[in-house]
Length: 314
Picture 1 (cartoon, rainbow, N blue to C red):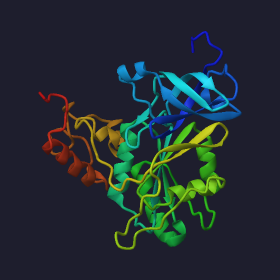
Picture 2: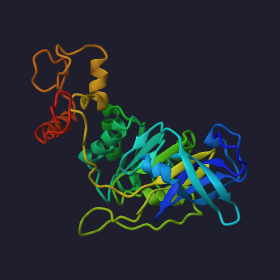
Picture 3: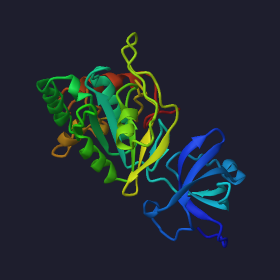
């Protein structure tokens, strides 16, 4: 922040409302270098300088911004600068995410392996650490839960089973969220994302909805992304539910988005650098793992749909 104006500050975009951006800043001009250190925060309704639009700057929830012309009485300000993003999640659009908590229910709606993998690929593509949150575990037997836990261990991902009804795992979940700066709750509709936030932050009382009996899946209740403070300087984002995230990747980098491939390629390399791990000669990958069929099917779809990849003349 290099403007010689005391009426400027630095903050984080916590929501987008119509044509305005809601920015959370310190009550007084902060000298802190880390946004997480801000205290006594207030929220300002902001517009942005025209130069940002003409320079092609799109501002998203999670962006760290500089604001000026602050009107503390009416809680208004103008954004004049956006800091470089450390990470960016495209759908939903959230900047500077440090953890994606992928919420998957055990029942109502049913656990869907293809769906889980799609959310994991989304996290891997954005280079953001995922945590699989298994919700509604009170609806299944312990033996069934253990089968899914063993499955996730083989996939190579961290997980945490929780139940709001039995208050199981909820304290651990909150601690995990407080260990990182900005957590996004992602997952299909109806898996309990909003219910989790209501439990962790009771003062919010966000609207929830049950699973559609006809469609056998959740009904959207969250319509936009908003960040909520959960203590220790950490923020939590509720996001609209997406039942089937699109799998999009550079075909030659697709395998690197799977821990199962990465673990094998640590110790040996395929004969050809552009090996797609199908039936190429000299491929060292042992394809006898559960998600290989998911990899192969989506790889073929990407090839057949002519998505951009190295060597494409388009």
